[in-house]
Amino acid sequence: SRYSAKIPTVKPNFPLLGQAPLMWRKNSRDAFRLMYDFFTQVDRAGKMMIGPKPVILVNHPDLVQQVLTRNDMCGKPFFYDFLGIKGGLVSERDGKKWLITRKALNPTFNTRVLTNFVPIMDARAKKLVETMRPLADNGEKINILEYLSECTLEMVFSTTMGRKAYELPGQKDYVKHLESVLTRLGERIVDVSQFLGVFYRMTDAYKKEQISRKFCDKFTDNFILERRQELQQDTKPKTVDDEYEAKSLNFLDQILTIRKSDGTFFGDQEIANNLYNVMAGGNDTSALTVSFACLFLAMNPNIQANVFAEISAIFDPDQDQMDLSLLKQLKYTDRFLKEVLRLCPAVPFVARETSTESRLQLDGVKIPPNQILAFNLFTLHRRSDFWGPDPERFDPDRFLPEAVEQRHPYAYVPFSAGVRNCIGYRYAKNSLLIMLVRILQQFELGTDLKQEQLRYKYEISLKLVGPHSVWLKKRSEL
Ligand code: HEM
Image 1 (cartoon, rainbow, N blue to C red):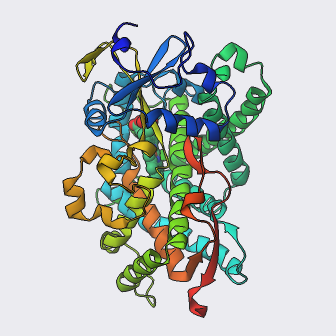
Image 2: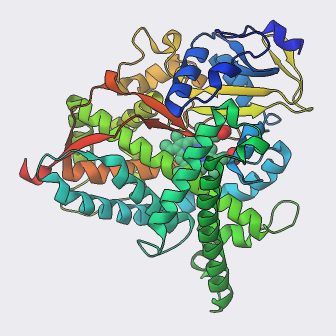
Image 3: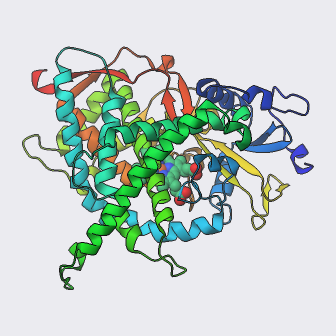
């Protein structure tokens, strides 16, 4: 199209096919590398061509700000359909429909709700360190991600779904199947040969995906059904005083009972889709971030000592306290986590689609409706014009208030930005801090991995090629 002639194309570029041949039958590691190479060629806006279809690479913080802060730019492009869920917070493509859902669900993550989640999260974090204790004796290397995924899953179940049990029947299989659906999705998004549904449905990959998807659907459907029945049976009289207690605070209960701004309730399918979205959005991302955090602590003993010192000063080892006011005092640890999310943003790519309302102009170029805009947070967070000559250097002080003040606010957006940002970002911050506190109180972390050896791949979330390999030493025996 004519507008896109004004936006430079990344290289290499094949006549008529654009970059499609490079995205043909690529695995998640090569694809991640490819997107790295494309985006690092772009200063402000560039484009790649999937055959005739341009994808605009929005790379400068000015333009990131311009697009993400607009309320009429909340639509999403075709590949979000690969998730196989029509609707739901993450995957709803229509910006207007999305807004109705988002407005209704925003309160499900408000401060009161999050405050109530703290002790629930803490109980799961304590269970995690108990599970890890026996591994700490012999200098054995473990893939810490495996342990953390279980913990974050239990957190999501017990908070957003209000389940009290530590482990639900079928939970482990559910995790496996959910993970396999997301991995499949990641592989499909980066491989042009799997784009067209008619061809994709003939593959073995598709058949495998269907099996996992069916398992997940059944699991969530049962969940919803059970909870609906419980809520209906709960006939104990509710007084005004009781309201705070009586009004269930978790995500599932709210979505079962609230009305949207158009007066309607959420239907069963919508509820299932949204649960699925929260599971998909909340679990992997948090587990990966804590795993990366543990790895950076293990690779940087001085920083680990600083984080541990702060935690020890705020949390009395003889007292079992955990609350938001204490978490808020963890200033250094907070900077540390921000730096982890700079170098390893768990969701490395975000995309938007323009609509007839958007009338977007990027650097003077008018962008027509139905055009795809893509953002790469991994490369954005490594621009040396915003992060200095050595952007790979791990340094929590990059997030000292005076440093932040001097930097472009949109050079750092690990939770995306604007109205369609991560709905769970305060939830995530609390859960990450709680897990870190409990892990560091018990263990010192070590590794033989070096930062420059880390290789990444894209499976919707940012994953390491290879394990998050660390060993644990019990502090009590140091
Ligand atoms: C470190 C942890 C996390 C990171 C880095 C992260 C990052 C992100 C990013 C970048 C987006 C925008 C995606 C897009 O536009 O395509 C997003 C959306 C979302 N996240 Fe998170 N997230 C995290 C944790 C969580 C948690 C714990 C939950 C839920 C409990 C959650 C639920 C969601 C949902 C539902 C959306 C879709 C929001 C919408 O479109 O309205 N996330 N997240």
